[in-house]
Image 1 (cartoon, rainbow, N blue to C red):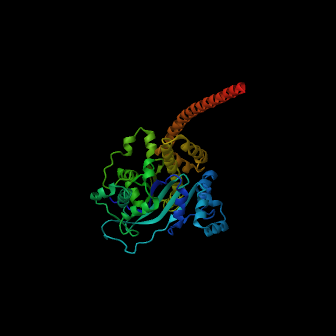
Image 2 (image 1 turned 60 degrees about the horizontal axis):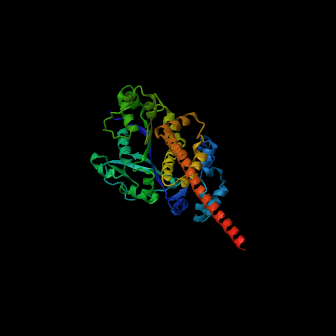
Image 3 (image 1 turned 60 degrees about the vertical axis):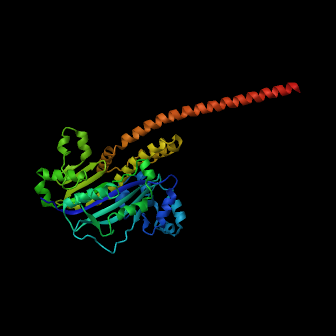
Length: 417
């Protein structure tokens, strides 16, 4: 039986890293791009974000909450060079990228899943780690199977594997782009080359998937008592196409509480959260009005930014690991600053937001990565200090030797005189 949705969206998140020392220039290029607009946050309009995040994290990600309207007007009057200099002083800057509608419209009509990219964000951290975020909605379909197929296919459009999977017969097309492959061109235009991202293990050709779907109440209730809903939810969670065979389902993890926790942290009669290392999904039923009003709004605002901050921590640890392999001193300052500024601070006091944070930290193995890096830092720090001490001792010996020679020459000269 085909399940039907009442509302849905999917965010696709692409991480990338800038070359060392290029952050301010990158911000300037974004400011000069007429399609990019810096996002200013307002305490009244964005009250949900202001009250959700604790002060340290709020200031770290949304520094513009502290600006008055006059200050924003004054900022907009500045030259882009000055603007980029000011923005570079903050830990995080968020831009909205405006899409120009393709006047040629849809292609290959009735031969695929049509979608719209309704929003593009560029989230830039001063460390040089950035995220390109696409919000997508399916058009002219309410089929849950289409969501499964679309998420599976779109996730790989920037990878070499995309062209190799044409045989799967999942066609996706957009109003915004004449050809879906043009999205890869846009990604390249915004992110630049991916050489550093690959070296630091930052850039993944496949997007991170963050998806919401609300099913029709009738479909949910008719399938909730059997394995149909469980099976489809597992495909949704693991970003698999509708016709895939699920082998690794939840019943395989019976008795293993840690693995169960990593798959889902919340499940009741009409709502399910699911997780993998590369995806977060929320499946609900419209039997409860909050499931298609309050819940999806919170999921794509407070919780989305929380997820992105956890992703940032993961990517930052990858970057630091890469930097430590290239030299201790260059990485030490950045590691200590990262730990002090953001790592040790709680994100929110909201109970469920805290549970989501813990689950993302677990799924992405962020704390494990931090402990490994800290151990490496401790060992390298001791080794570095020992080497520095040896160098200093050698210098001291040379200096003492020179002083002794000078003193000896002075004595000889004095005796001859």
